[in-house]
Each structure stands twice: as C-alpha cells, then as structure tokens.
Length: 290
Image (cartoon, one colour):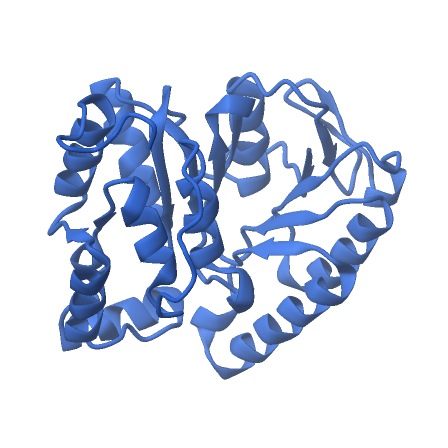
C-alpha cells in the first residue's frame, strides 16, 4: 500500500490518508512518498515511487498535485501497482479542460493496466483487511453492509452511522467522478453482491439493469438517488457542479429500480436503517443457502 504525496501538514490529504491507514491497523506493508523524504507519522518516506521495491505494493492512494499524476502513475505501473485511488481535484468537475485531462488520465491508466477510482474521490474501506485508505475520518466497525456510491459523502455518512449503531461495514468506496467509465459502479455492485456468497444470475436479463437485478436477487438493495440531489432539475444542476456529471431524469432511474426489484430510500438514514435491519434479521421466505 502506497500513499503518494504524504505530508507533514495535518490539514493536507497526504497526512490524513496516511494517518487513517495507520490508525485502522492495516496489516500490509505501508510505503509513502514525500518530495523532501521527510518522516511522516513515524513512517520513513521516499522521494520517488521508483525508490519502492517492485512487487511490494498493489494499491496507491494519490494525494499529489494534478500535474504530477501522469508520471507518478507510470512509475507505479513499473513497480507492479495495479490499482489507484486518485483524491486530486481539478478534473471533470472543473470545466472543459478538466474533462479533457480526466479523459487522458483514464486512457493513461488503461494503457498502464491500472484500475482507476476517482479522481476527486474520498477513498476506500475494507474492514476484512483493516484498510482505511481515506481522506475523511470515519473507520467503521466490521460488518455485513457493503456500500458503493458516486458520492463520497454518502459513503462517509454510512460509515458514521455504522460507527454509531454498531452494525458494521464490509467494504465501502466513494468513487466520486467515476473516471474509469467502463469499470464504474456495475462491476463494484457485482463484486459486493458476492461478499455473501451469492451466485451469478442466469443470462438473458437486460444489460442496463443486470447489476441491480444481480444484487437484488441475493441481497436487499437500497438506492438513495434522491440524497444525491439529482431528483429535481435544480438538484441535477447541483450534482453537475459537484461531480461534473449531470444526473439523469429521475423517472428513468425510478423505473429501472422498480424493474430490478430495488427499494428506493429517500434519505441516507433510511437507506442505512434498511440495510442494517436486513443485515441483522432473517429474510422471510428466502432459503438460508442464498
């Protein structure tokens, strides 16, 4: 695990990300880069990714300035890193040039064989691995709830609610810009649906609703579209200013949810309460083998 751009300043993303990783008790090797090779939180940093031994890390949390990211990811690929979470802002949410830069970043990662989450994201949590690679504070108790969202704030709310209630989280990712468009939420939903040992659905379902159908067949799916602000015209404009992507007509999403058997939640709290209830109570009429 690498934190690229670790900082000695407590207000910087590179400090917070490294702090959260160490505080969560991550059991893997931790590396960090700092342009001055300064010690950060007791970790001896290196000046360059190239100073990290090849094959020792597979994930990097990128907290470096935007203009450094392309070269940094090239260096990561050379030492065997295959996944990157980019916290850096200034991409698609910032205008036309930002969208161009984001498209180039996505294509660059594809050529390098690096799976990209972000940019302008908050991080990823995996309690089975004691991994809290985030630029926000909450690290939840371990539990059965998995959450994947375009909104990092939505995921953070789930983590805070899990900490308050005690019904914990297995994995969480707030992808924010979802730069790697061919690898965005549907694959994450399919992987999260297998956390409980579910099997794949038979073929023949519509491509666009298959990820929701797949999840709903084995788990209770709670969709919190309204909480993201895309359910109204003004909300869609607000979503665009935050994530750089315009929300679709809410009626379309509502119809897709009904078709897939997904229950919508009007607030983050409702979504979490439903998930926590269904995670701790048996489902009526559902075989235990599911």
